[in-house]
Length: 366
Image 1 (cartoon, rainbow, N blue to C red):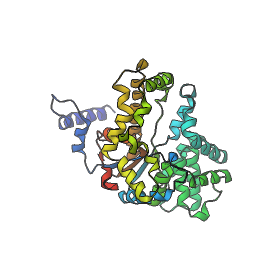
Image 2: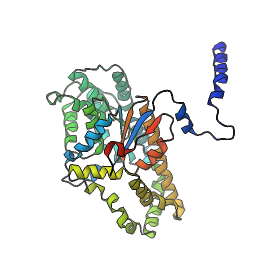
Image 3: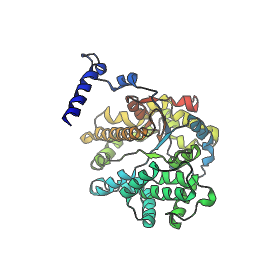
Image 4: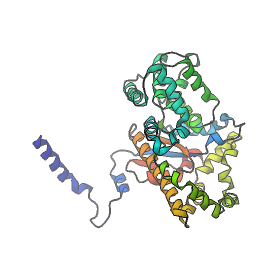
């Protein structure tokens, strides 16, 4: 053992000079991008309006031109703005701190997990472990029974959207209650045909279309505890700054009304092109975030809110980076609320194994 340790230490000494930069320069992680052996991962952050806020007559068919362009990008990994079962469990365990965060952001995921657990008898951690074991051995051409079993495991692990990928990859005649899928869970999964949410209308549907086995939830709400104590101060701050009037300014209306501009396939694609443009990113930062720190606020509430937001984005980046490890040098699509896009683009561009793709190259110019 001592010999192996000494050999490892000697090896490090031999290669260390090759990694050293100028002694007068601080380390920049982007410098490692030049040293990468092989091509970097191609990563596209797709900023989206939250489709749950779209008008009642919203027709998911208008997303087809967008889906076609994303399918042409051919991602190997698709990440979505949802909590993982691991995060849900942690938030529930610390509910005294996080109050209703898990239920607010993962109520349906918890419902799906409960329905699946009642059939297969696994809680969130046990189901996640079984998901990983199953995926490691999953055949290229699984039987319908195997897909139903994996769908049930995904649901039990808190990953309803990956359960939907498996469910939708089944022929319609095979979407039945069997192999861990109870009648109640089958009905629950069927409800998503009528629900409006980008995680399944874009993420899970695209994964199904491309023959992927899952999507990766990468959202995080572990900084929400910073917000609860300052809600009164934030309300006071927003009222004093007349934020309502700011939101009515003409230059922000195209951004604010994005969910109302999804009536036709052409309009929907145009909206996505705009939301993913540098112009929209700059406007969103000015509208929602810069004003939190460029003026005083009671008890520094604005700065605390900014800390929560930046921490959330950084944790999302960490989850995305983990998901990328499943496809080194591959293509990664992140489907996320458009407010996150400028932050994620900037943070992810710092990482050694990523080339951030300009959305215009995939969607076309706005």
